[in-house]
Length: 50
Image (spheres, rainbow, N blue to C red):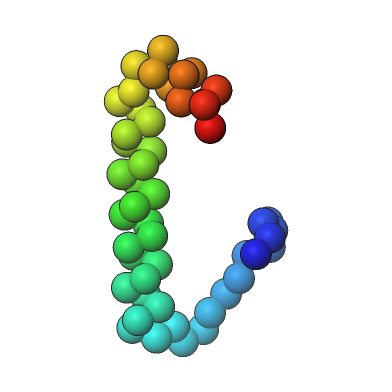
Protein backbone atom coordinates (compact mmCIF):
# COMPACT_ATOMS: atom_id res chain seq x y z
CA UNK A 1 0.00 0.00 0.00
CA UNK A 2 1.29 3.45 -0.85
CA UNK A 3 0.70 6.80 0.77
CA UNK A 4 -1.50 9.29 -1.02
CA UNK A 5 -2.95 12.66 -0.09
CA UNK A 6 -6.14 11.92 -2.02
CA UNK A 7 -9.18 11.76 0.22
CA UNK A 8 -11.18 8.58 -0.06
CA UNK A 9 -14.92 8.96 0.47
CA UNK A 10 -17.10 5.98 1.37
CA UNK A 11 -20.79 6.80 1.04
CA UNK A 12 -22.25 3.86 2.96
CA UNK A 13 -19.59 2.31 5.21
CA UNK A 14 -20.39 -0.96 6.88
CA UNK A 15 -20.54 -1.28 10.65
CA UNK A 16 -17.38 -3.41 10.62
CA UNK A 17 -15.48 -0.75 8.66
CA UNK A 18 -16.59 1.95 11.09
CA UNK A 19 -15.43 -0.13 14.07
CA UNK A 20 -12.07 -0.83 12.40
CA UNK A 21 -11.51 2.85 11.65
CA UNK A 22 -12.40 3.74 15.24
CA UNK A 23 -9.87 1.18 16.56
CA UNK A 24 -7.19 2.64 14.27
CA UNK A 25 -8.02 6.16 15.45
CA UNK A 26 -7.79 5.16 19.11
CA UNK A 27 -4.49 3.37 18.48
CA UNK A 28 -3.06 6.41 16.69
CA UNK A 29 -4.10 8.73 19.53
CA UNK A 30 -2.50 6.45 22.11
CA UNK A 31 0.75 6.33 20.10
CA UNK A 32 0.79 10.13 19.78
CA UNK A 33 0.21 10.47 23.52
CA UNK A 34 3.03 8.02 24.21
CA UNK A 35 5.39 10.13 22.06
CA UNK A 36 4.30 13.32 23.81
CA UNK A 37 5.06 11.81 27.20
CA UNK A 38 8.51 10.58 26.18
CA UNK A 39 11.56 12.36 27.48
CA UNK A 40 13.58 14.00 24.68
CA UNK A 41 16.57 11.69 25.21
CA UNK A 42 14.36 8.58 25.01
CA UNK A 43 12.74 9.90 21.85
CA UNK A 44 16.05 10.60 20.08
CA UNK A 45 17.44 7.20 21.14
CA UNK A 46 14.35 5.47 19.77
CA UNK A 47 14.51 7.33 16.44
CA UNK A 48 18.19 6.46 16.00
CA UNK A 49 17.57 2.75 16.73
CA UNK A 50 14.56 2.50 14.42
